[in-house]
Structure formats: structure tokens, C-alpha cells
Length: 404
Image 1 (cartoon, helix red, strand yellow):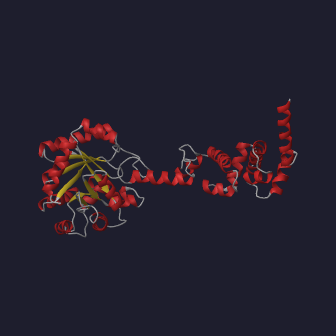
Image 2: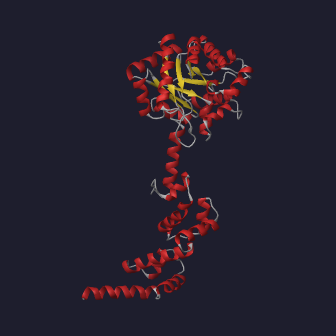
Image 3: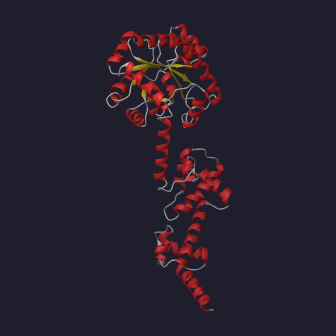
């Protein structure tokens, strides 16, 4: 898609809808769904691919793979063949020593990408490591050069910036969109544990957007991630700043995927009776403490007493040793696991013998005993009479009560 046409569409969206949306994706599936949901453009980032792999977005900063090769492969084979109606931008790691920047930008354009975005960006790196990188020529200025060359090639450009100086440099290089990068997205299992506040994000965006108005008031102003990961968060930013759009990465792929897959798996695991406070489900989302083990065993017995239950299997699921689970249970409950299970089954059998018309053999099977002889012996040991005698006693008591 031509740059002038893209800008015409995006400005029209801003004028009509009030804002635009960009989605940083890591697969054809997430890209397709994002576009179906209304994303105005896509960013093909190595961070997106790493998120799909179950890693943090920061994996794109390490030498696990060649970022540009990952993006090129994903774009050419997953995104561009199926995404026809919105621009797809190449997440360019401009400090890659294996590329000649100008020639590589032409290759990006020839392969069908509508533009570039500077990612991974050195703007997110600081301290001594940043100093060492810049000494080697791996600096933010290289990203500015990439945006300038892409603009010269009439490519659509989105520039991540974290301060006023970076934003000014990108605007002077011809960036069409300035996106305030607020850090990695909070939320979910892989989300950032430390992040700035919404109010701090507002102030940061306000300062950078002021530069946008001074240098190029036609540049589109957007923000990315950090503490802003819900529509409510964005409503606040739209009201309190001159923001014209939102770019999300984890917001559109990792977090929804985590939730959907996790909840679906839990629902199937719990037989369709999924409850948030169910201790069975607590295993799968972590957060265990020793007090939960006994409650978990008791709840499991309550729900599955009719099935074969082995302490070893429960310990395996809870990721603890059978001996520890056994001693913990006996300490807190006062009796052993086996004793508790037998008593629970006998109590259930007594209820059924009093209330149901099932045969004694069927009742035995209902409470987990395939061998009726064994069930009868255990029942007699605990109740002082056979299952048949117990039923006759209570049937007789009921009849006498009826005629008295």
C-alpha cells in the first residue's frame, strides 16, 4: 500500500472515529483476528513471535535468533499472503551488522511491506550496556537513519520514542507516526511486573506530543503498551492527552491467548464445571500454600469418591511427594488419607441405602467399590452390621414411624 494512501486512510479514521489502532503481532492467526477486529495496521515484530513461543517480548533483545530474519520470514509466509486490506510494517532492527540499511529497506519494500517501525529499539536500553552498544555504533541514531531512508523510499513509518529528544529526531527524519513507548505491557503471566503509573504515562505522552505539535502537527500521535492495556485506560489517555491512537502487542495477542486457552483447558479438565475458586483449578494457575493441600484432597474426594483415588496421583498433580501429602493431611485432618476416604464412602453408601432403591451391590459400585464382598466387610466393620441389615433397619424404622 502506498504511503500517501495509508496516511489518507489513517487521518480519515482519526477524523471519523477519533482514533486508530495498530496491532503488533507474531503470527498469521493473531494478525488476521486483529484485522477482523478493526486494527488499522499491523506491526510484524520479533517480539510478537517470541510471545507466541511463550517468551517475554524482551527475548527480541537477546541473541536467540536474528530479529530481522524472524520478521521477514513471518511477514512473507504468514502475514502478507493473508492480510490484504491493511498495511503491514516491518519491525526493523537497524543495528543488525549483517545488513546494508538502504539495500535492506528496498528488499523490505519489494517483499510487500508497506513500511517500517524501529523495533527492537535502543530507546528501551539504558545504563552501561547502552553506553557499550553506542561505542560500537549500535545507537538510536541508527534507527533515526532507518526512518529517514524509509521516508526517502516513500515508505510508511512508525517511530517508537521514549522522550522528547528521540521524538524530535524521528519527526525531523520524516516519521509519519510517533508512538510513545511506555514499556512492556503489564498483565497476564509474562507481563511486566514493574511499570509506570497511568498518570506518569499521561505526563510522558503529553511532553512528547507537545514536540509533535511543534515539529510536525500532521504526524499521528499514538502510545504503546506499558500500564495501558484496557479500553478504559485508553479512554483516560484520550481525554487527558492529544493521543490519536493505540498500538498494542501483548494486549492483542498474548493476554487474550493466555486467557482463552487457559480457561478452555480448565473447563475441559473440570468436566465443564469450572469455578474460579475451585481448588482443582488452583493447581493449574499456581499460588499454592501448604494449607491448600488438605482442602484439595477433601474436595477431590467429595467430587470423585465413586472413582478410584490414589494418594500418589494426587501428590503428583500437586507437585509434592506422597509422603509429605500423607503426613500433612493426617496432621490437619486428624486421620489418615485412607481412613478419611473409607469413612466418606461409607457415609455416602449409608445415604444411598436409606434413600435410593438401588441394590446393595449397586450402592457399593456407586461409592467406588467394585468388589461387593470387600465393601460388605468394610461396611460391617464400621457400622456393626451388613449393608442389607442397615437398609432393613432404616426401612423398618421408617414404616414404624409412618404407622405410629
